[in-house]
Image 1 (cartoon, rainbow over the protein chains, first blue to last red):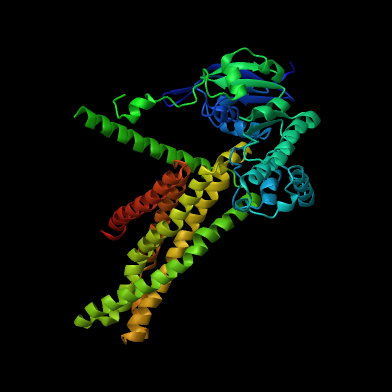
Image 2 (spheres, each protein chain N blue to C red):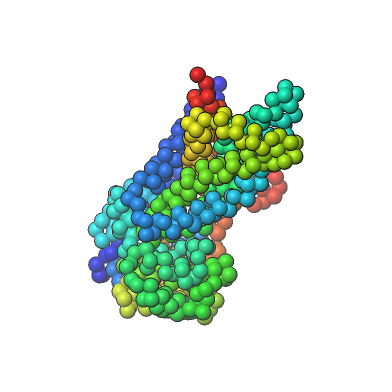
Length: 267
Length: 259
């Protein structure tokens, strides 16, 4: 195992009374693609926000290159965030800017590069996600998948040490999906960027991840390389990997019996 | 009974916590080293959308309010043979009261609601979060320019409102009802005092601008990031700003214009 860029130790997090994470620990190795998988609503995006310092845990440590993120001051946290970026599930593009301006934004904010060089770099990033021809469009004129690819171009604009991808494959057609999968892998292999991918798309994640954590029921229920995960005997893990409705992870949100509710009986 | 006391305590804590958050947000946004290169274009953009785009409603409203004050004033004053006092009557009521107050109410409805909705939508679409993750402080990038733009533009809008209202009064009082133009202007000039009337009107409009813009940006920044949450926040901006402006106006008037 190589050196860890992010280390999460004994993390517990509650949203009001509801426990999201109960004493979990995990490591994100430097220069590798680490995937976080699990059923909907178990707090995978929350984990990314905890790593990004947007949420504070109730207990535990989140170390980024040895610095404990929750205990950093506001100014130190902002300095640290220059080393990371995040692809949001919604894209989160600035709606008052064109695609070009969106991708150029972090470069203009954090570098002193001349405008002609920024222009070339933006075009390179947009070419990588297949949107160079859409650089003058506004986010409102893009489809969901295109908006996410534009956001991906913005996330990789400054080649940060750590990129947090929140559902990068959602809404992509098969061709775009292949490009995005390859791009995430290439960024790690060629530039040594560390990636954390949160996704439901099992085949895509299995094809690019170096290491996978499967989260359910406030815990990490399985971890390992894609091969190790495939061979795990755990019913919980296999149910998720195979996408089976019946198993230890309930498909239905907790509720009273279907029959009694239809008949109008008291729970 | 116990439940009522608990509810009262809960609501009191909620209000105080909200005030604390609003104060912290404002201080974090405005207490910082200025960066003219990045801050100036953002401020200019906001001055345009908050100030320039509010001009039409301010000019139209000011004109009509000046005309109505002149018409009402003339019908009362002429009964006492005091129509020569129409100029100062229009000017004083506009400069001392209606200028700052009506501008503030219009500003809250036009610019305040727009500020809250815009910031709330940025929050709902994770644009504020993405700024944070790009190591760009949204308080500095989004809140501060909007706050300063409101604070600068509203007193100027109030001055424009007063000017066009006095001209509106002239249109009705002099051009329509026949009051002598020289009397309208000269009696106004003699009766309106710079520090007691004009300066106090300016102070009022600055106070109102501070309160409305603060409420507007805070409500957007603190809203529940859903369509219903944004709708509630926008309504709260207009309602709370309007009520606070009217309450503050009474307090300021009592402090400024009573012995």
